[in-house]
Amino acid sequence: MSWLAAFFRRWRCAPVALPAARLRALERRIGYRFRNPELLVQALKHRSFVYANQGRGLEANERLEFLGDAVLDLVVAEALFRRFPNQREGDLTQMKSVVVSGAVLARKASQLGLEEFVLLSHEERQSSGGRQPSILSDALEAVIGAMYLDGGLGPSRRFIERLVLQGLGEVIADEEHTNFKSKLLEHTQGLGYGHPKYQVRSEEGPEHCKVFSVEVSVTGQLMGQGRGFSKKEAQQMAAKDALQRLGAL
Image 1 (cartoon, rainbow, N blue to C red):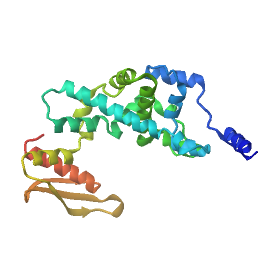
Image 2: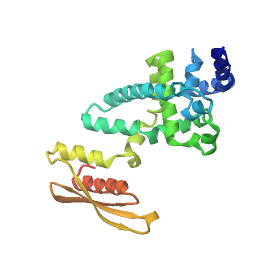
Image 3: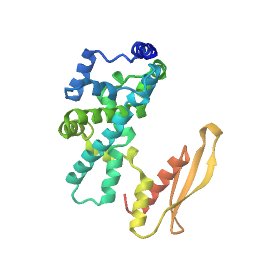
Image 4: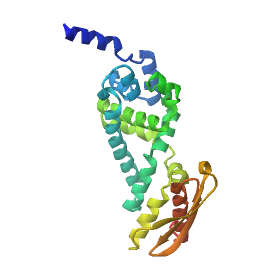
């Protein structure tokens, strides 16, 4: 009878689903009624919730996130292709990387109020996990994946257009999300100059609050300088400076 004991242990520890009223509230926000609400529930299950309830890793939302990421890429790529008919492939790739970035998706998930519905362990919830950008962006992609499985590409496309692609121009123009290093690399390779080279020139300040100064050179010629509270930030500022000097911004 060991199988029966295992069944009751699993039943007793099974994760509690969201109440129907809460699911309906989320469906109203996303503008879609699920034929199989369990797909939506799974999309909201962070792995901390699953493991806290002695579930299996496959019950978390990560597989749906994988699928939703692919659907999101397709819809965003098509929207950019149609909206910017005169842009090169490299420019479209850069735009797409901004639109589907974790920072942008987390912001869109917050606009939706998704943090109210994500299922987390008590410990993760106490540590403000519901507001972590990575958890929010992953949950949003999982919801898109669940919607695609439940209703196909049509509802998924309409949801992405209504939420993620809203204010597309402002998102793309927001320098906070621009990867200047990637843009500089594309520009220099397009000119046949190869890869830019970054070098840290100085580190100032105490260990917990260092300021880095970085230079970037192209074909051995100094092209840009930048400062930041991390090497990565300083490199981005140096790349931006180089792009401005090259007339590419």
